[in-house]
Image 1: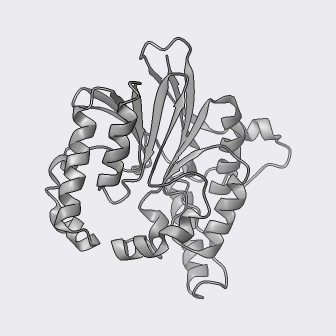
Image 2: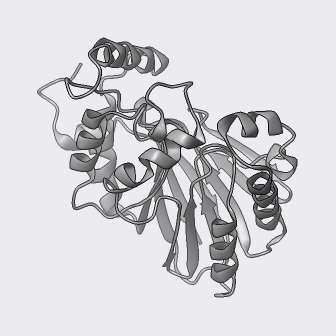
Image 3: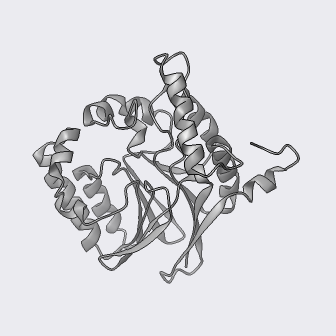
Length: 278
């Protein structure tokens, strides 16, 4: 797929930036690079034997969805991390891997070693195969997966140039009371907050009308109520200025209760979010 006559700069130019400008009245512009939905699809003999051909099939799925790109997801991630050197902060919003295998996480850890980034989990991080999601699997694999990434993939924050960047896991469309506590503490700093997550913010998070799906995944009634309260806080808190997500594999913008909301396309297509806050 790759042309050996092309240099690193040419490959970086293959990235397809979704350019976003957000005006908050900062003294100096802050530049954020958002990466999402890489979907590394790799396996080896350490997992079940059938996972090797399964992984090859999944790579073909994304190759076709991306319309036969010149780079594979590994190449695009390498390009994007090189490109990130020109930004004040890099945020990876989940589905870095397509399913939970030793090979996927070995490669992910190697590609991100020594790099500066924020990371929140998506829904694919915890599944042995897409479509087999459950809270039991998520809880059981959390520590192993977290060990491959810097920071806290449940929720973490970083202040950059007068803006508070929040990166939070909502890969199963649900939020937690622990996240709510962090959000309130960060709001006390009095700085504008940008919320990065995997699943785009939506009205169903304010009511969880699809409660049956939440129960199927293994959440309790208490956790469902806490999720609704946290989502409502995100809407009501005036310091939360915008939302950035992935999950849908294409670029999209919408107004969510008066707050700009963005979905960034998948990096397996070469798409990155190039966000300037001023």
